[in-house]
Image: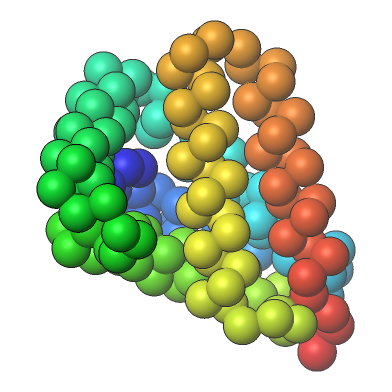
Length: 159
């Protein structure tokens, strides 16, 4: 998952959706507790995809940083980089769809706009992937991802 290199793999969404649907089918709870289970199922399906392709993620980060470097050297004022900002918006939309799927299947509703929660989630995931690429510390990564799921669940309520 990165901008210029476009590591939003084609199998990402189906893999995550399948994990959420499978978890939803086995739930005997609803609401925020169910939401947490579904979020965890999706994040747990996502992480092996990252670990399976570290070189692709590194190339994507490098390409993004290179395009941003070129943009900031030419235009030092704050303005979005056209290609990279579009890709981040696409990632936000994909994550928003995931978040909404989890809410719909759990009987929970988001207390904040799902687009805002998605942008936060993408930011955390981007930092988590970059950190893991640097230190390969699975334990730290799992703690961060679990904290992400816990934090997301606090942004929802029973329907």
